[in-house]
Image (cartoon, rainbow, N blue to C red; front, side, top):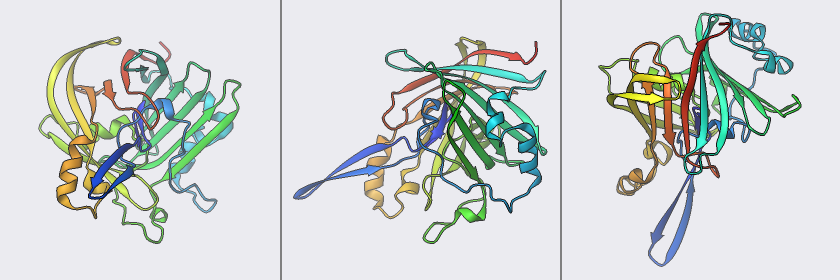
Length: 303
């Protein structure tokens, strides 16, 4: 799964769980939803429905007008003047190597909050990502991403829609507040209603064409935090996949043993509005390093 970002892909950065059974050794590769990094944004497209010619919603029109659904317009999308923009740097937690830099901001399209990211890799590739969120709660309506090489040519793209058509024969019933594999930062705050009074919440992330994973999110405490972008009063959150949601048929005593082995990701958000994302620490995606993502600058576009 990817999350932000820059943590933001939940592409099923995975965990390998090995179980010793009497008489033989069984190796089980379990694809688990753990916040992944933005640095793997071009790796595997999110699963989900594509926009069909028959679909002609007002949301689609708003995204088309904004240039978010047109391949040739992706690199031209920039935050409108006056919009608050946050810039982040993601690095390898161990070596300090720069993995990606990205801008993030929110707009209102079709009356709904839309979170947008522009990623720039040291090797020259660029990716634009957007999430059109549901009017309330943590669910997503429409998500898309496009990646371009250093010459500006599109090399990959993905589209996901929260639609009944996601359910294929043999699949579970998906919850209405479903999220794509690449989870937007705003979803974590919405899971807690951005309220200091709510300490726990959940996110539902499509893991495969047949099922989804439940991500437990909880608030730990508030603290003073210094990052490259300034000093903030922050809320510390943690998130981890509920293994039972991924392996529902497994014995409960086995799941209790495995659950503590699932990695957690730690998020720091500004404690008060606008609840700006400040920092992320946690495991990377499959094959990638552990990462650290940190706010390095925030400003109003056009100033």
